[in-house]
Image (tube, rainbow, N blue to C red; front, top):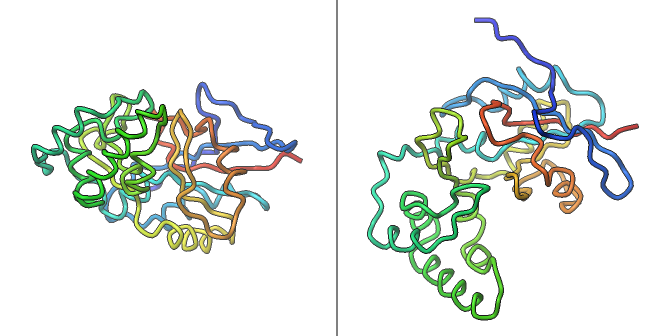
Length: 236
């Protein structure tokens, strides 16, 4: 079956350009098929991203896209939260940018990924932090494995509106593998939402703060655009 490769786009409600440190960068979302377990992400990149690349471009991939191909998307029906997960999730702030660990199923996966003792210690640190007016201590202690867990929201693209998605395994290695099929382009694995984000993996050493700033307003969007990757193009 032939698949039409669409040109990179600027998603609705998103800005094409952003200026960081005096330089202006274009950010273009790349539409793909719905990626599922067993898909070869390098083949997806070759089919949908490579035809649109220009010299000097950098490419970024959603961590959810990578995790889904690795089988790290777990159906809600297969997750059976223990009482501790139900209790802890009820105490989590419900962030408008994503469900995070504020549901029993995502908290259950955090307990499995990080270990019960680490999550309990992180929760204790969170309580201490609140006494001093400090935020974010839970995720600092629990680590990226916990922070990268993503639950379903009303805008999640089916079938993943019925899944919990874990963080990707070996994001640096995946970025390097993708770069090889993208003519050596700088490749990033990112965890971004409408409130900001992080660089989880890269094909080479980078200025993390620079690329975090370039992508801080989430040019991919969070609705049903089916654009799990994008291109960064420095304006000449």
